[in-house]
Image (cartoon, rainbow, N blue to C red; front, side, top):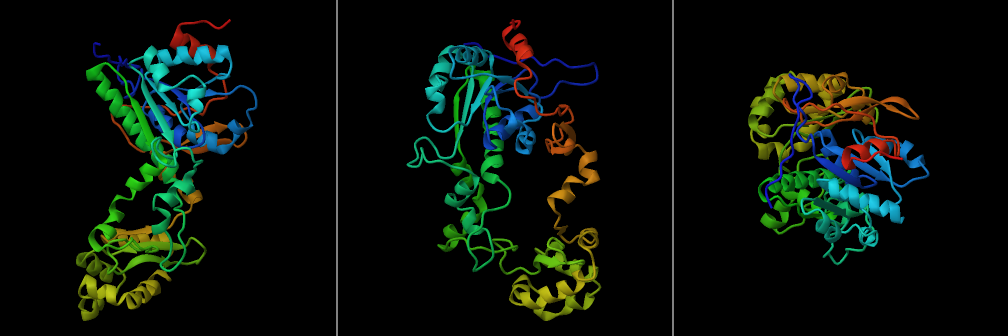
Length: 396
Protein backbone atom coordinates (compact mmCIF):
# COMPACT_ATOMS: atom_id res chain seq x y z
CA UNK A 1 0.00 0.00 0.00
CA UNK A 2 1.28 3.46 -0.82
CA UNK A 3 2.33 5.77 1.98
CA UNK A 4 -0.48 7.91 3.31
CA UNK A 5 0.02 11.49 4.39
CA UNK A 6 -2.24 14.01 6.06
CA UNK A 7 -2.58 17.33 4.28
CA UNK A 8 -1.98 20.33 6.50
CA UNK A 9 -3.71 23.53 5.49
CA UNK A 10 -2.75 26.86 7.00
CA UNK A 11 -5.64 28.71 8.58
CA UNK A 12 -4.28 32.00 7.29
CA UNK A 13 -1.34 33.40 5.38
CA UNK A 14 0.59 34.09 8.59
CA UNK A 15 -0.76 31.39 10.91
CA UNK A 16 0.31 27.80 10.27
CA UNK A 17 -1.99 24.88 10.98
CA UNK A 18 -1.46 22.92 14.22
CA UNK A 19 0.94 19.98 14.12
CA UNK A 20 -1.82 17.33 13.98
CA UNK A 21 -4.28 19.23 11.78
CA UNK A 22 -6.21 16.74 9.68
CA UNK A 23 -5.62 13.79 12.01
CA UNK A 24 -8.93 12.23 13.07
CA UNK A 25 -9.16 10.52 16.46
CA UNK A 26 -12.15 8.43 17.51
CA UNK A 27 -12.19 8.63 21.31
CA UNK A 28 -13.98 5.83 23.19
CA UNK A 29 -12.32 6.60 26.51
CA UNK A 30 -13.53 7.45 30.01
CA UNK A 31 -12.18 8.27 33.48
CA UNK A 32 -8.63 9.76 33.29
CA UNK A 33 -5.97 7.62 31.58
CA UNK A 34 -7.70 7.34 28.20
CA UNK A 35 -9.01 10.91 28.04
CA UNK A 36 -5.52 12.18 28.96
CA UNK A 37 -4.10 10.51 25.85
CA UNK A 38 -6.70 11.96 23.50
CA UNK A 39 -6.50 15.33 25.27
CA UNK A 40 -2.80 15.53 24.39
CA UNK A 41 -3.63 14.82 20.74
CA UNK A 42 -6.38 17.46 20.79
CA UNK A 43 -3.97 20.03 22.23
CA UNK A 44 -1.65 19.25 19.31
CA UNK A 45 -4.41 20.01 16.83
CA UNK A 46 -6.01 16.62 16.09
CA UNK A 47 -9.76 16.43 15.45
CA UNK A 48 -10.79 14.34 18.46
CA UNK A 49 -14.38 13.08 18.47
CA UNK A 50 -15.45 11.77 21.86
CA UNK A 51 -18.12 9.07 21.80
CA UNK A 52 -20.49 9.21 24.77
CA UNK A 53 -23.59 7.15 25.60
CA UNK A 54 -26.91 8.92 25.10
CA UNK A 55 -28.99 9.87 28.11
CA UNK A 56 -27.86 11.03 31.57
CA UNK A 57 -25.37 13.87 31.33
CA UNK A 58 -24.66 14.42 35.04
CA UNK A 59 -21.12 13.05 34.86
CA UNK A 60 -20.29 15.40 31.98
CA UNK A 61 -20.99 18.45 34.11
CA UNK A 62 -18.49 17.23 36.71
CA UNK A 63 -15.12 18.92 36.95
CA UNK A 64 -13.05 15.79 36.10
CA UNK A 65 -14.72 15.60 32.69
CA UNK A 66 -13.96 19.25 32.05
CA UNK A 67 -10.33 18.87 33.05
CA UNK A 68 -9.73 15.96 30.65
CA UNK A 69 -11.78 16.72 27.56
CA UNK A 70 -11.07 20.23 26.31
CA UNK A 71 -10.69 20.90 22.58
CA UNK A 72 -12.68 17.80 21.58
CA UNK A 73 -15.95 17.29 19.72
CA UNK A 74 -18.67 14.95 20.96
CA UNK A 75 -21.16 12.53 19.46
CA UNK A 76 -23.65 10.39 21.39
CA UNK A 77 -23.86 6.77 20.21
CA UNK A 78 -25.54 3.73 21.72
CA UNK A 79 -22.79 1.25 20.92
CA UNK A 80 -25.00 -1.69 21.91
CA UNK A 81 -27.64 -0.91 19.30
CA UNK A 82 -27.39 -2.08 15.69
CA UNK A 83 -27.56 1.47 14.34
CA UNK A 84 -25.03 2.73 16.87
CA UNK A 85 -22.62 -0.11 16.12
CA UNK A 86 -22.89 0.57 12.40
CA UNK A 87 -22.18 4.27 12.94
CA UNK A 88 -19.16 3.52 15.13
CA UNK A 89 -17.77 1.24 12.41
CA UNK A 90 -18.17 3.90 9.75
CA UNK A 91 -16.52 6.53 11.94
CA UNK A 92 -13.64 4.13 12.57
CA UNK A 93 -13.35 3.68 8.80
CA UNK A 94 -12.78 7.44 8.50
CA UNK A 95 -10.47 7.73 11.52
CA UNK A 96 -6.69 7.80 11.71
CA UNK A 97 -6.63 6.84 15.40
CA UNK A 98 -8.95 4.80 17.63
CA UNK A 99 -8.46 4.92 21.42
CA UNK A 100 -10.33 2.93 24.08
CA UNK A 101 -9.85 2.08 27.75
CA UNK A 102 -12.88 -0.06 28.54
CA UNK A 103 -12.55 -2.94 30.98
CA UNK A 104 -10.96 -6.04 29.43
CA UNK A 105 -13.23 -7.75 26.92
CA UNK A 106 -15.77 -4.94 26.56
CA UNK A 107 -14.58 -3.64 23.21
CA UNK A 108 -14.59 -7.18 21.79
CA UNK A 109 -18.17 -7.72 22.93
CA UNK A 110 -19.11 -4.44 21.25
CA UNK A 111 -17.74 -5.74 17.95
CA UNK A 112 -15.04 -3.05 17.79
CA UNK A 113 -11.90 -5.12 18.30
CA UNK A 114 -8.63 -4.36 16.56
CA UNK A 115 -9.07 -7.29 14.16
CA UNK A 116 -12.53 -6.10 13.13
CA UNK A 117 -11.49 -2.49 12.56
CA UNK A 118 -8.17 -3.31 10.92
CA UNK A 119 -9.93 -5.47 8.34
CA UNK A 120 -12.00 -2.43 7.36
CA UNK A 121 -9.31 0.25 7.80
CA UNK A 122 -5.71 -1.03 7.60
CA UNK A 123 -4.40 2.51 8.14
CA UNK A 124 -5.95 2.75 11.60
CA UNK A 125 -3.72 3.28 14.63
CA UNK A 126 -5.60 1.36 17.34
CA UNK A 127 -4.62 2.14 20.95
CA UNK A 128 -5.81 0.30 24.05
CA UNK A 129 -5.10 1.47 27.61
CA UNK A 130 -5.65 -1.01 30.44
CA UNK A 131 -4.72 -1.38 34.09
CA UNK A 132 -2.69 -4.52 33.43
CA UNK A 133 -1.31 -5.94 30.19
CA UNK A 134 -3.46 -8.45 28.32
CA UNK A 135 -0.83 -11.17 28.84
CA UNK A 136 -0.29 -10.32 32.52
CA UNK A 137 -1.56 -12.75 35.19
CA UNK A 138 -3.64 -9.82 36.45
CA UNK A 139 -5.09 -8.92 33.04
CA UNK A 140 -8.72 -9.14 34.16
CA UNK A 141 -8.28 -7.51 37.56
CA UNK A 142 -10.05 -4.19 38.14
CA UNK A 143 -7.61 -1.30 38.42
CA UNK A 144 -7.34 2.37 39.20
CA UNK A 145 -4.51 4.82 39.82
CA UNK A 146 -3.71 4.13 43.53
CA UNK A 147 -3.75 0.39 42.89
CA UNK A 148 -1.28 0.46 40.00
CA UNK A 149 0.99 2.85 41.92
CA UNK A 150 1.04 0.29 44.73
CA UNK A 151 1.76 -2.81 42.64
CA UNK A 152 4.33 -1.01 40.48
CA UNK A 153 6.52 0.19 43.34
CA UNK A 154 5.65 3.90 43.47
CA UNK A 155 3.91 3.72 46.85
CA UNK A 156 6.82 1.82 48.41
CA UNK A 157 9.24 4.70 47.80
CA UNK A 158 6.83 7.46 48.83
CA UNK A 159 6.48 8.71 52.41
CA UNK A 160 8.66 9.35 55.42
CA UNK A 161 11.47 7.02 56.51
CA UNK A 162 10.03 4.56 59.00
CA UNK A 163 6.47 5.42 57.98
CA UNK A 164 4.04 3.38 55.89
CA UNK A 165 3.97 3.41 52.09
CA UNK A 166 2.01 6.30 50.62
CA UNK A 167 0.36 6.93 47.27
CA UNK A 168 2.13 9.74 45.38
CA UNK A 169 -0.04 12.83 45.02
CA UNK A 170 0.01 13.25 41.22
CA UNK A 171 -1.96 10.63 39.27
CA UNK A 172 1.07 9.32 37.42
CA UNK A 173 -0.74 6.03 36.81
CA UNK A 174 -3.60 7.76 35.03
CA UNK A 175 -2.40 10.99 33.43
CA UNK A 176 1.15 9.72 33.04
CA UNK A 177 -0.08 6.66 31.16
CA UNK A 178 -2.16 8.88 28.90
CA UNK A 179 0.86 11.01 28.01
CA UNK A 180 2.96 7.95 27.17
CA UNK A 181 0.10 6.52 25.10
CA UNK A 182 -0.01 9.76 23.10
CA UNK A 183 3.72 9.41 22.38
CA UNK A 184 3.15 5.87 21.11
CA UNK A 185 0.27 7.04 18.91
CA UNK A 186 2.42 9.80 17.42
CA UNK A 187 5.18 7.28 16.68
CA UNK A 188 2.69 4.97 14.96
CA UNK A 189 1.36 7.84 12.85
CA UNK A 190 4.90 8.74 11.85
CA UNK A 191 5.70 5.13 10.92
CA UNK A 192 2.50 5.00 8.87
CA UNK A 193 3.98 7.65 6.56
CA UNK A 194 6.54 5.06 5.46
CA UNK A 195 4.42 1.90 5.61
CA UNK A 196 0.94 3.17 4.78
CA UNK A 197 -0.42 0.93 7.52
CA UNK A 198 -1.56 1.43 11.08
CA UNK A 199 -0.84 -0.85 14.01
CA UNK A 200 -2.07 -2.03 17.39
CA UNK A 201 -0.81 -0.31 20.55
CA UNK A 202 -1.34 -1.63 24.07
CA UNK A 203 -0.28 0.24 27.19
CA UNK A 204 -0.86 -0.94 30.75
CA UNK A 205 -0.95 1.58 33.55
CA UNK A 206 1.03 -0.79 35.77
CA UNK A 207 3.76 -1.15 33.13
CA UNK A 208 4.01 2.60 32.70
CA UNK A 209 4.43 3.25 36.43
CA UNK A 210 7.02 0.46 36.71
CA UNK A 211 9.17 2.12 34.04
CA UNK A 212 8.47 5.62 35.37
CA UNK A 213 10.46 4.71 38.50
CA UNK A 214 13.54 4.28 36.32
CA UNK A 215 16.11 6.09 38.49
CA UNK A 216 14.93 4.38 41.67
CA UNK A 217 16.07 0.95 40.49
CA UNK A 218 19.64 2.03 41.24
CA UNK A 219 19.23 0.81 44.81
CA UNK A 220 18.43 -2.84 44.04
CA UNK A 221 20.86 -2.88 41.09
CA UNK A 222 23.86 -1.25 42.78
CA UNK A 223 23.28 -2.15 46.44
CA UNK A 224 21.03 -5.21 46.37
CA UNK A 225 18.61 -3.28 48.59
CA UNK A 226 15.04 -2.15 48.12
CA UNK A 227 14.83 1.59 47.52
CA UNK A 228 13.87 3.16 50.85
CA UNK A 229 11.55 6.07 51.54
CA UNK A 230 13.35 9.41 51.82
CA UNK A 231 10.53 11.79 52.65
CA UNK A 232 11.45 15.11 51.04
CA UNK A 233 15.07 14.17 50.38
CA UNK A 234 16.57 12.92 47.09
CA UNK A 235 16.83 9.13 46.61
CA UNK A 236 20.48 8.98 45.55
CA UNK A 237 22.00 11.82 47.56
CA UNK A 238 21.20 10.65 51.07
CA UNK A 239 24.43 12.25 52.34
CA UNK A 240 23.44 15.70 51.12
CA UNK A 241 22.33 18.61 53.30
CA UNK A 242 20.44 20.81 53.15
CA UNK A 243 17.93 18.85 51.10
CA UNK A 244 14.47 19.05 52.62
CA UNK A 245 11.49 21.32 53.13
CA UNK A 246 11.86 24.04 55.74
CA UNK A 247 9.14 26.03 57.55
CA UNK A 248 8.35 29.65 56.77
CA UNK A 249 5.99 32.17 58.35
CA UNK A 250 3.05 32.27 58.89
CA UNK A 251 3.73 28.56 59.46
CA UNK A 252 0.56 27.17 57.91
CA UNK A 253 0.24 23.61 56.55
CA UNK A 254 1.88 24.58 53.23
CA UNK A 255 4.22 27.36 54.35
CA UNK A 256 7.47 25.64 53.44
CA UNK A 257 10.31 26.06 51.01
CA UNK A 258 12.20 23.16 49.42
CA UNK A 259 15.97 23.73 49.43
CA UNK A 260 18.60 21.48 47.90
CA UNK A 261 22.35 22.07 47.83
CA UNK A 262 23.60 19.32 45.54
CA UNK A 263 27.29 20.29 45.40
CA UNK A 264 29.95 22.33 47.17
CA UNK A 265 29.43 25.44 45.02
CA UNK A 266 25.75 25.57 45.89
CA UNK A 267 26.57 25.23 49.58
CA UNK A 268 29.01 28.14 49.41
CA UNK A 269 26.40 30.25 47.63
CA UNK A 270 23.83 29.28 50.23
CA UNK A 271 26.08 30.39 53.09
CA UNK A 272 26.54 33.80 51.46
CA UNK A 273 22.85 34.17 50.60
CA UNK A 274 21.67 33.68 54.19
CA UNK A 275 24.30 36.03 55.59
CA UNK A 276 26.39 33.30 57.21
CA UNK A 277 29.72 33.42 55.30
CA UNK A 278 31.53 31.82 58.24
CA UNK A 279 29.82 28.53 57.38
CA UNK A 280 32.03 28.27 54.30
CA UNK A 281 35.06 27.76 56.52
CA UNK A 282 33.45 25.36 58.99
CA UNK A 283 35.35 22.05 58.59
CA UNK A 284 32.23 20.06 59.50
CA UNK A 285 30.53 21.31 56.34
CA UNK A 286 33.48 21.30 53.93
CA UNK A 287 32.30 18.27 51.92
CA UNK A 288 28.98 16.76 50.87
CA UNK A 289 29.68 13.75 53.07
CA UNK A 290 30.42 16.02 56.02
CA UNK A 291 27.25 17.98 55.50
CA UNK A 292 25.31 14.72 55.36
CA UNK A 293 26.85 13.59 58.64
CA UNK A 294 25.85 16.89 60.24
CA UNK A 295 22.41 17.13 58.68
CA UNK A 296 20.73 17.93 61.99
CA UNK A 297 22.98 20.94 62.59
CA UNK A 298 22.52 22.21 59.04
CA UNK A 299 18.74 21.75 59.18
CA UNK A 300 18.68 23.83 62.36
CA UNK A 301 20.69 26.60 60.66
CA UNK A 302 18.42 26.55 57.61
CA UNK A 303 15.25 26.54 59.71
CA UNK A 304 16.49 29.51 61.73
CA UNK A 305 16.86 31.47 58.48
CA UNK A 306 13.66 30.33 56.74
CA UNK A 307 11.68 31.15 59.88
CA UNK A 308 12.31 34.83 59.12
CA UNK A 309 11.23 34.72 55.44
CA UNK A 310 7.99 33.79 53.74
CA UNK A 311 8.29 30.89 51.31
CA UNK A 312 8.32 32.99 48.14
CA UNK A 313 10.84 35.45 49.58
CA UNK A 314 13.13 32.57 50.56
CA UNK A 315 12.80 31.05 47.09
CA UNK A 316 13.66 34.34 45.38
CA UNK A 317 16.66 35.10 47.59
CA UNK A 318 18.17 31.67 47.09
CA UNK A 319 17.21 31.35 43.43
CA UNK A 320 18.85 34.64 42.58
CA UNK A 321 21.98 33.43 44.39
CA UNK A 322 22.11 30.25 42.30
CA UNK A 323 20.81 27.91 45.01
CA UNK A 324 18.00 25.48 44.07
CA UNK A 325 14.91 26.42 46.08
CA UNK A 326 11.17 26.30 45.50
CA UNK A 327 8.20 27.53 47.49
CA UNK A 328 5.69 24.80 48.35
CA UNK A 329 2.61 26.11 46.56
CA UNK A 330 -0.93 24.84 46.87
CA UNK A 331 -3.01 23.86 43.86
CA UNK A 332 -5.02 27.04 44.37
CA UNK A 333 -1.88 29.18 44.36
CA UNK A 334 -0.68 27.53 41.16
CA UNK A 335 -4.09 27.91 39.52
CA UNK A 336 -4.16 31.64 40.33
CA UNK A 337 -0.58 32.31 39.20
CA UNK A 338 -0.83 35.23 36.72
CA UNK A 339 2.39 34.19 34.99
CA UNK A 340 1.03 30.72 34.18
CA UNK A 341 -2.18 32.23 32.84
CA UNK A 342 -0.33 34.80 30.77
CA UNK A 343 1.75 32.08 29.12
CA UNK A 344 -1.27 29.88 28.41
CA UNK A 345 -0.43 27.09 30.82
CA UNK A 346 -3.89 27.64 32.30
CA UNK A 347 -6.66 28.72 29.95
CA UNK A 348 -10.11 29.98 31.00
CA UNK A 349 -13.10 28.06 29.62
CA UNK A 350 -16.80 28.17 30.39
CA UNK A 351 -18.08 25.53 32.85
CA UNK A 352 -21.84 24.81 32.99
CA UNK A 353 -21.87 24.91 36.80
CA UNK A 354 -18.95 27.12 37.88
CA UNK A 355 -18.90 29.63 35.04
CA UNK A 356 -15.47 30.64 33.75
CA UNK A 357 -12.80 28.34 35.15
CA UNK A 358 -9.11 27.91 34.27
CA UNK A 359 -8.03 24.47 33.04
CA UNK A 360 -4.52 23.11 32.47
CA UNK A 361 -3.56 23.37 28.81
CA UNK A 362 -0.60 21.93 26.87
CA UNK A 363 2.78 22.84 28.42
CA UNK A 364 4.87 22.38 25.25
CA UNK A 365 5.12 25.73 23.49
CA UNK A 366 5.53 25.15 19.75
CA UNK A 367 6.38 28.17 17.61
CA UNK A 368 4.91 26.67 14.44
CA UNK A 369 1.88 24.86 15.84
CA UNK A 370 -0.64 27.23 17.42
CA UNK A 371 -3.73 25.62 18.95
CA UNK A 372 -6.76 27.40 20.38
CA UNK A 373 -8.11 25.66 23.48
CA UNK A 374 -11.88 25.24 23.38
CA UNK A 375 -14.23 24.19 26.22
CA UNK A 376 -15.01 20.51 26.68
CA UNK A 377 -18.01 19.53 24.57
CA UNK A 378 -21.61 19.20 25.59
CA UNK A 379 -22.48 15.48 25.26
CA UNK A 380 -23.46 14.71 21.68
CA UNK A 381 -23.36 18.34 20.64
CA UNK A 382 -21.41 17.86 17.43
CA UNK A 383 -23.28 14.94 15.88
CA UNK A 384 -24.41 16.78 12.74
CA UNK A 385 -21.04 18.32 11.97
CA UNK A 386 -19.12 15.11 12.69
CA UNK A 387 -21.37 13.18 10.30
CA UNK A 388 -20.80 15.88 7.69
CA UNK A 389 -17.05 16.32 8.20
CA UNK A 390 -16.09 12.67 8.64
CA UNK A 391 -18.68 10.82 6.57
CA UNK A 392 -19.98 13.44 4.15
CA UNK A 393 -23.50 12.80 5.42
CA UNK A 394 -26.28 15.19 6.34
CA UNK A 395 -28.30 14.16 9.37
CA UNK A 396 -31.97 13.71 8.78
